Length: 397
Length: 215
Image (cartoon, rainbow over all chains, first blue to last red; front, side):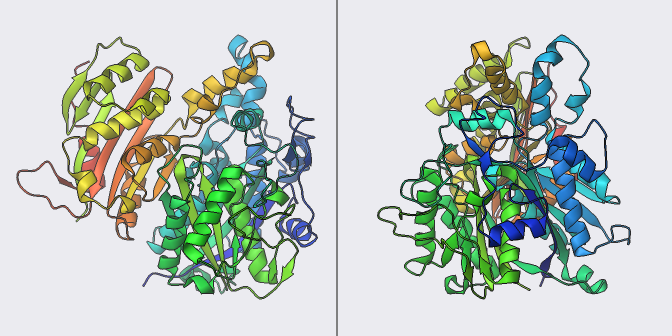
């Protein structure tokens, strides 16, 4: 029997707060972080809303106390969230145990590269920017910032990336390859992303309305979130306290379309069922689902179908928290892992904002007000382009 | 036992399967032309192929070559078949194309057909869609082919419910490209006459270095 895996530290920065306590405050006050674009330079500034972190790059540089010009927004926010998680957990990376960093990102250093893209063809003044362009760069920066890290890797599987980072972290501990891992994801906003999602015509110009009949699309967000995973052996050794247990996880491919989910949510159904099987939990033991719920017509219908396929008529209470943070892409699953742990700790379901009318034929109604109720098990879904579907199960510790 | 049952390697405008070169085009042919020639050589009619970006075409073809002449797709439960790929450049080649399309205000034309391919795991999606493979999938970005990571990861998967996997490296960066995909099956055993090899780091390194490229 392999050891249990616990979450022992949380760190998060997004549109709803620069750290976990601020995020909790926004969530418990039903206060969205999505609004007018202030920091990103884009032609869509007045056309679309976004979930921006409320700090400029120089504010972020001050917070990480590092003026290294090689750092970019993606690295700043990743470093801040990872450090917060480590401090929160109380682990000491110098104590001789093996620590890993597994991070995920899809845009990496694009936000900075695109500022100099034209110039780079004409002169070599900003060549150093390219050093920070790779997906692996922010992960390496986190590792340097934390110090004494034994293992580093980067995952890129679109919007389920951070869930897959959490899964890999759990497995590496279970297989004795690491004692604890800082896992999560990061994606800062960029013009690249905005333009791309706009061409796919899945951006809502108003606030997104997950699971609403009249939903028009998603709002992009940015953020970073990390959790510290520890095996029970390492945790017991230092007499640390768990915040939650990772009770199950699974990943499956929808094998249907590159950017659209299958109408019946086949991949999602597989992921949820396999995560349940792994945990040994029954469907009626799930107290709440933190949905992927992006607000696109396709995702929310497909995820609803999958939910009904797994839970039948006894669908647990559910909500999507994307209307708080926006869709933060590679960070989404770790942001929602942090939110799920906050739900477990505080016995609170955070509402699905902006919902009024259920999707015709599905009749699934999310929680639209803050609910105070004891929670023991939470399912969290994350689905990405390329058909990549992941589900995680968190249990109250 | 966990067995490598087939592998394909594409590099230097040549395709090798299980160590032997099975297709090659002129060494000076551009990547797009090479991919088109290689596609024709397998006699497949799959219109979606022509919509893919170069990295997906390359990964897709490498999988086709590795799977050809095998019983992999019929003898394994495809809902328990994983696809694990990696590379160093993520989706850089198509990122550049998308960036060009939004860079110039007077010539601004971002396209959904391009943006879709600005994620490396789309290559996995294309292979999954073609063969209805719905098992676990992950895409790692590593500096170079990380046999330790891949072998550990596959062993973990195969001890946790997965039964088979397509594994490897698919990279396009400018004019340079390489794809290397091997099939792993937990139900097969090595016998004297087969090309089958036990899955471990050294066997992966061996098959990776096996092909004698002619140019």
